[in-house]
Length: 212
Ligand code: SAH
Ligand code: MG
Image 1 (spheres, helix red, strand yellow):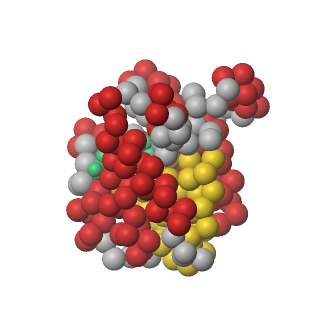
Image 2 (cartoon, rainbow, N blue to C red):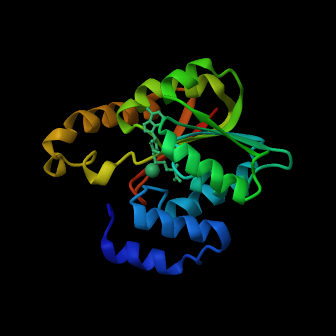
C-alpha cells in the first residue's frame, strides 16, 4: 500500500465486487500470488478506457489474462488486444482463461520477451498498458511511443514501486537499480514534449501519459 492505509481501505470498500470470470481470476491471483492490477487501478483503467474507446490495445505483461479480459470490455466493437508475456506457464493459463471468457478472437497473446517482441511489432495502438519488467520501462518507451497513436494513452503500472521510488528511506538494497531506472523513466515521460503525463498514487503507482 503506498497511500494511507485508511484511505485505501475506504476506497476499496467503495468498489463494487467483480462477477463471473474476473472474480474467479481475482481469487486465483490471490491464492497464487500473481500480481494482477489492484482493484482501484482496475477502476481507473476502466474509466480511462471508456473515455478513450480504443480500437486497439497493447499490453506488456499478460500474467493470467486478468487485465486483458478486463480491458476487453472497453474496446470499440471489433477492437483487439495484443498482450505479451515471456513466462510460458502464465501464457498457457492466460490462454485458457481467455478461451473460457470467449475472447480468443479479441485477445491475442504473444509469448516472448517484451523488448524483442516490441521491436518486431509494427502496428498502431490507441492504448498501451505497461505492466511488465519494471527495470525495463525506459527501454520499452521508444517502442511504445512509435506504436502509440496521437490522442492515445500510455498507462504505466507500478511506477512508485512500493513507495521506494518516492523515498530513499524505503529502498531495499537489491532493488536500488530498479528504483533508479524507474525514476529515470518517470523523468522521461514527464519531460517528453509529445506527452502529457499525470502520476497517480493508487495501487503501486500509475502514470497516465496522453500522446499529443
Ligand atoms: N497485467 C497483468 C499482470 C502482469 S504481472 C494483470 O494485471 O492482470 C507481470 C507479468 O509480466 C508477469 O506475468 C511476467 O511474466 C511478465 N514479464 C516480466 N518481465 C517481462 C518481460 N521482459 N517480457 C515479457 N513479459 C515479462
Ligand atoms: Mg502491475
